[in-house]
Length: 294
Image 1 (cartoon, one colour):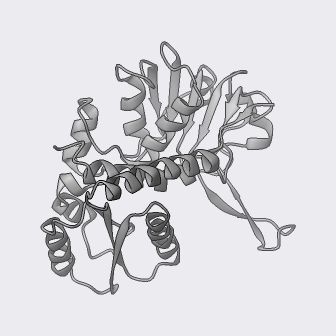
Image 2 (cartoon, rainbow, N blue to C red):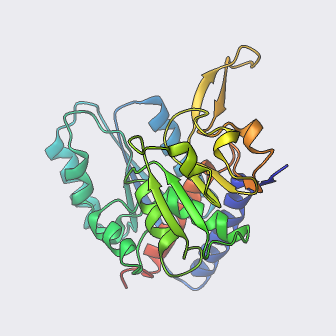
C-alpha cells in the first residue's frame, strides 16, 4: 500500500507556521497581513470557497475583507473596485473569485490586479517571474503540490515527471516548476493533454505522475508504473446511494487500484485541495513582508 501524502495534515502545519510568524510580526509592532477577496454573484461553490479563505485568515491572525458584488455588476465597476484595492496600502493581497459572469473578461480583470498584490499568482508578471525562476507568487495549486513533494522528501532530480493536463492554473506551471533548477525540480518533464497520442503508455513511464485533467477516475492502475508517486489534482462529485449525502468525492485517479501499486499518492478529498488555501495565505504573508517585490 502506498504512503498517503496527507494534504489536510500538511496544510494545518503550514497554517500553524504562518500563525506563529504573524504573532511575531504583531509583537514587533509590524503590520498585520491583510487579504481582500472579491466575490461576484451568488454561485454556491464560489461562496463556500471564499468563506473557507476568510475563515483561514482568521485562524492565522490575518485581517480579511470580503467585497460582494451582484451578478449584474458591470465590468467597468468591477475594474474600479480592483483599482481601489490596488491603491489601498493596508491590503497586501487581492483575489477575485472565479468563475466570473460571462459578460466580464477574466483576462481584463486579472491584468488589472497589481502584480505585488496578486497572491493567486495569475497575472502575466507573476507567471513570467515564475517561468524565469525569479521570486514570484506561485499559483496556489502548483505551490501546494511543490510543498507536498518537499515535505514528504520525494526525490525529483533526474526523475521522469509526466503531467496530464495543460491548464494555465495547474498543468503548465507544474511542468515549469518540476523542470527548474532547484528542489523540488530538476526532473525531466513530459506535458501531456487531451490530444496526446499514446497517453497511457507515456503515463506508465512516469516516476512522478501529476494528474490535472478534470475527468473522474481517468487514470487506472494499468497506466501507472509500480513504485511511482501519484499526485491527483482532480475533484468531482459522483452519485453514491450508499452515502448519506447521496454523492462522494473522487479524483482524476482511480485511487483504490492505483494506491496498490504507487509508492506514494494523494487522496481525494484531503490531498492537494487543502493545500491551496495554505498557499494563498503563504503568498499573502510574503506580500506583507515585501519578500517578493521588495
